[in-house]
Amino acid sequence: MTEGREWTFATLLAMAAAPLLAGCRQAGAPPATAPAVTVATPVTQEVADYVDFTGNTAAINSVTVVARVEGYLEKVHFADGTRVAKDQLLFTIQQDQYRAQLVQAEAQVLSQKAALWHATTELARYSALVKLDAATQTTVDHWRYEKEAAAAGLLSAKAQVELAKLNLGYTLVRAPFAGRAGRHLVDPGTLVGSTGQQTSLVQIDQIDTLYVYFTVDERDLLRIIERQKTTSPSPIQQGTVPFFFGLLDEEGHPHEGRLDFASISVAPTTGTLQVRGTYANADHRVLPGLFVRVRVPALTKREALLVPGDAISFDQQGEYVLIVNDKNVVERRAVKTGQQIGESLVVDDGLRPDDRVIVEGLLQAIPGREVAPHPAAPASPPPAG
Image (cartoon, rainbow, N blue to C red):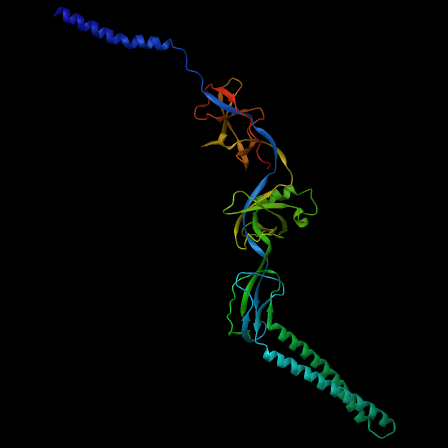
């Protein structure tokens, strides 16, 4: 029994000493190596500031063609949705009535010419007789009245001829400008142009040039005015301010136009100003009424620092980057970012050109921890802003 107790006591002593011996061996082990991270200095580049808006497109000319005379619609001369040329025939309205009215007006002109000739002849005859005391002055005055009335009647008859020609011309409905026609709104055989009513026949939009409308809020408007203080007259009035826009299914802003109009006052209810630009829609791909993303760049460029977008992190305190100081220790640096250019972000505040920004290995970079920085491989510069 004594030997068993001694063996058990020795075993327990050995088990208790084992962790102590292991701890001594770990205390003597070399420290772990610093984690490797990839660093890069900010890229210095000229960039142009920009402001983004949401706008919509509109046809530069849009008209709803209506019937200007009354009659039955005889024929439609175009296919719905096709392009039409200026003065192209679109509709024909029944013409028989208006041809007859023109003939009637022309006949009235001949009648008034005959009346004028007769009155002129009689006035001359009685003017000669009154000198011989063979006629009275009253008769002379009567034929002078008849002559002047016939002259006035002739002018009125000629005006009726012009009106009859106009009405006959209105029976041929033509396109006021080149553009794209919508669907015809009235079928042949329908009475159009009834008195007191306007019959819409078709809508035509001119889309070889488009307007792009958007609104500028008060803050952005003051920024734009600040940029243009030294420019007179306004670049918008000169048509020299470019803008870019993209459709909802497009990347970036591939379409370029020029601003040409700004409202003369700010809407007091919304604090916004309406601005308009023109876009040469040569391929007619962009249609009126689309929502677009508009970008207006600044007129001048400035030097800016750019870092990869992946290097920017966010927390409750805002945007920040992790940098490596001269002792290879990670530091948190609060920054203020601006616009995006390619895959890089402009840093407006918080960085210096010689700062080493961690671009890879962010999960291993803990502020206050020593790291092993490695320079990033040279990359192609971001596209010009």
